[in-house]
Length: 117
Length: 56
Image 1 (cartoon, helix red, strand yellow):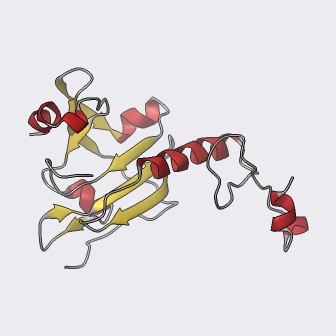
Image 2 (image 1 turned 30 degrees about the horizontal axis):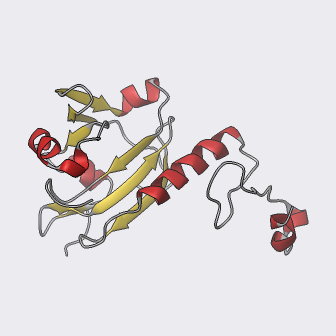
């Protein structure tokens, strides 16, 4: 099924990631995205660290597609934060090189100033 | 919509899982397991969708 779809759909011709199948629905139940009433999965996206910890979870209803840019932003931020555990990526953080924060007592009430550095 | 049986939350450890896969890069079937991804020290994006031949 995945094979036919990947070969037939032009939007998928560049796909290189593994396309897994979950015929029992066990994995989608584990992540809470299986809809028992329809037998379908919601549009769930989960980022898992190399240690096997869920770092991000996003679930959309059937009628809303996802933003690949947003998923890549989150993956990039996660990789950066794993390497720099004292930092935090604030709202609007987009890419490596953007300002990160080092939360501390000194920053309380001073986030605007910290963002201008 | 019925209630979900359970749902992992952010910060929780994912229990071991294994999936049969189609590998477009090889044009062949394969397998992905959490143990394998951990061993390869890979970050993973797990992407669920309702059905093939729909948008994502």
